Image (cartoon, rainbow, N blue to C red; front, side):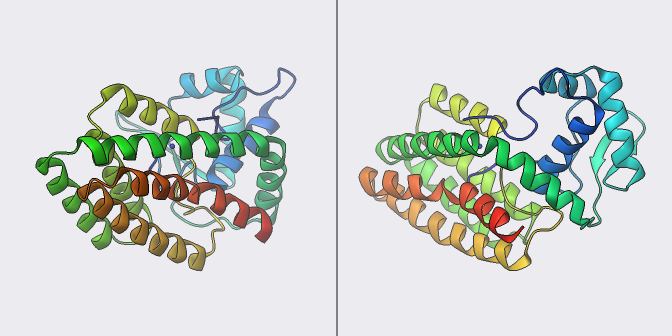
Length: 251
């Protein structure tokens, strides 16, 4: 569990082929929701940005999103804070699972490369944190760890996870590395699997594994054990790909 918040493109972060229209956009949106790129209650990016990312017209994007609104996957909210949001209620339609598996299959190698990049980047940042941390950083890391431990399962746990990893990046003392991490995680954006047909046991297992890793990471950074911290960080960053592999195996 590496934050969101987290290398190569996620399902919504690479352009569609020119011939793809509303149906292809709908499938990409379904996949992004299925794998947890956008969790229940999450607001989608602005229409202009999303259309540009996918390489389609705003009219095509609107058509695809209208289809998902009709089926209850998305909710349109008006007003200054409005927009398109992923519905809070589950939509465990089998065709959604099939779509997600098919789209993931075509981009699987990209996801493997992205996971490898994130593992290497987390290794570097955590090593730097162990070498450069101050007592103030240590205090904040322990505070963020307790917040992660106390957070309810789901989105609150994911937010606490992201806050802890941000504190680690700050402890590294290198704003360039922190910026690279932020940009990579924004592109990958494959975090906790609170998706429409996620297995609750998978989620519980993942959160327990993340807690154990976080406890060890904070202890190793506090002890300035850069080598051990870096090795653990690389393994920890592989959680996202493990979850996607579970999703493919379960489908």
